[in-house]
Image (tube, rainbow, N blue to C red):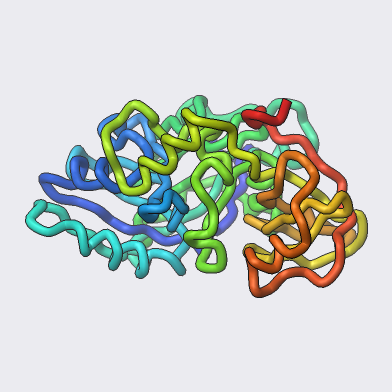
Amino acid sequence: MYGELSTVALDTYGVLRARGQDIVSFLQGQLSNDIARLAPERSLLAGYHNPQGRVIALLRVLQLAADDLLCVLPRELIGPVSARLSKFILRAKAKLADESQLWRVGGLLPLTQQAGAAAAARPAALPAAANAAARIAQALVVRLSGEPARWLLVSPAAAAALPGYHAAPEPLLWQRLAIAAGEPQVYTATSEEFVAQMINLDCLGAIDFDKGCYTGQEVIARAHYRGRVKRRMQRFVTSAPRHLKPGDAGELQDGRAFRVVDAVALADGRCEFLAVAPLEPGETEAAVAAGSSRAAAARLDVQALTLPYPLPGSG
């Protein structure tokens, strides 16, 4: 059944478990998506923001039970996020725990897709729609991007691996596909650097503009209703070999300031990356230095690549 799939370990990700009688109402007041819409068959991507609307972390939220949720995010942010959220629990019946040692986070990729097939056959048990979730044995499986297909796999660390999987032949393939899908991630280097719309959370369905108040909601709603966001996450590839990492900053050849959201090395040494930059030329070099202590020294020659979704205000 699983012979057409390959697996990739996502060891840099961990699990923050959130449970208790009031956990949904508590997180509803903290995260940008409508947590009440969670269901066994539906996961949610949500941002956790500071009062200025800047993204502290991105969480993929899955439901184990009505009062028992798993939040997947980079391990390096679980401690700070848990500590920050815990300050607001007060009398709510809610508990947060870092359970990264108890869960295994990985990804599933169709092998035929890696060979360049236009469409890969997949097991019927795998969820087909974006953000849809399903259980396979003891594992929770979530469909992420549209095409090429990818699934997030979260299973108990002690559970036996599902049979028939093959290790992905390219260790960076998952990250390359995430960047091609325009999926941002927030790390320690970029936590609290970007307003939600700067990393396209509105394009990815990670913001519910009709739900009630949550931390940062006023700033995020104002940006949505009162004017376009001038700086957006875009996709680029360097023209020559270059190493970039999240948080790096510099200037594109047309003078636009950029800050790297995520990046991956290509086989030829070039770098494909997601970066927040103005939609129109005109930002100065001084703005780059103000945005990061690690500003790049020279302008970067890049080629702009398409995203699989339109950017508001780009046309």
